[in-house]
Image 1 (cartoon, rainbow, N blue to C red):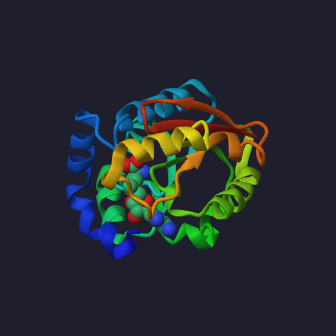
Image 2 (image 1 turned 90 degrees about the vertical axis):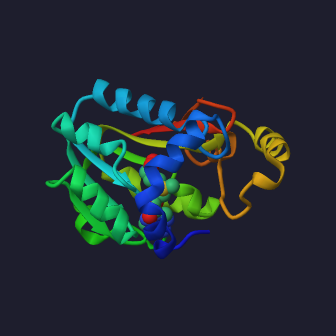
Length: 205
Ligand SMILES: C[S@@+](CC[C@H](N)C(=O)[O-])C[C@H]1O[C@@H](n2cnc3c(N)ncnc32)[C@H](O)[C@@H]1O
């Protein structure tokens, strides 16, 4: 599992390497652009302009919303990722902090129309994911929605099948989303499979 220094080192090459993996349709980023586009269009279709991005990286998704006049807030633990995201979104409110220990206090005070986490929360264990989502839900506005775009599967069986097909490529350090297990804790959770390894999860307030 990469720590913040590992992400600092990856940051300048991040957009390129993710783009290549997506274009080639290779694990782990096959479906990346589609997942981000689905979330982007869904946020645009809803009302409200306050968006929180958890683990925003270089700001690939939120910078597009920023250009449309959305108010972007975010938390990431990589200093270099934050610098690159600020270049695209100079007036965004971006904070450095480790989400495995929660949100920084500046972000916990607000309400958000959309809370986005793309390819970041697979660094949390399943129990940590449940706790983290329970902490985020009260931060949503009345019509708000949490969007998770990530390596995700409808069932554990689907995930095991993908793992078998990926062989040595599979990253055992990452803990991917299994929709039907998480739904036991969040009955309103919805899921869309985007590629053989990518999915979008929706959790409305
Ligand atoms: C794979 S990148 C995804 C970036 C972006 N959301 C995207 O979709 O391209 C994961 C991001 O999450 C951040 N991250 C990973 N673990 C984190 C943690 N525990 N606390 C805060 N940020 C974290 C990394 O620094 C990195 O910017």
